[in-house]
Image (cartoon, rainbow, N blue to C red; front, side, top):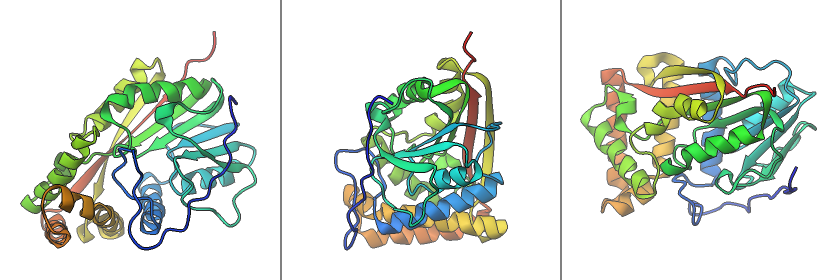
Length: 289
């Protein structure tokens, strides 16, 4: 590896929400968000019936970019005990009491380049960073993921969108609420119209990968969708609550007005049987000639 970056524990998070300074990332880095990210992980694992869709077999090295709480990477380390598994993020927001011996956290920012040698990882995973990576940076980020992937290795990207078109059908409260979030995202240079989600396979193709596959996924939102729908509604609600304060401040609303809109939207999801769109794309780096 080009350089070694040690583990850095996040200071105790008490009181007000903690947002990252000088970062486009919309969501906070606090204990509530830590819990939501773990919850979201279980929702996605249930949805995908596993932790990934790429046809990997026995990877020797695995990288999770934007690892959040590290739960996905830790589970991969348990599934592949012979592999070295690294979770990379801006901060280590959760320190596991007994992580697998083959897992470690590395502090880093993909926007500054990954602190690893080229052709190093057999499987590179990146999930739900549409509220973290500026729209203009996506092609370069994917190129960086490709750089650190070994010939014959796989990359998997999972993304959604802060566009109201990702909620279908969307009632008036949902459209208004998600529209405000999208406007705030756009002000920070983030994707507000679902362009990243629609372009995942194109990014991979343009980066020179082969065997590109795209999987569009619809997730029910609300109790109408059974257990999965109920879990997804909780995840969406908690995510929106986490950014209700900056949304309210930017658009001259009270935080309670934003939360009232969320309550109305929650009712709409059940009335209209709303689903949320995600996309998973995976591709393989050509083997060395």
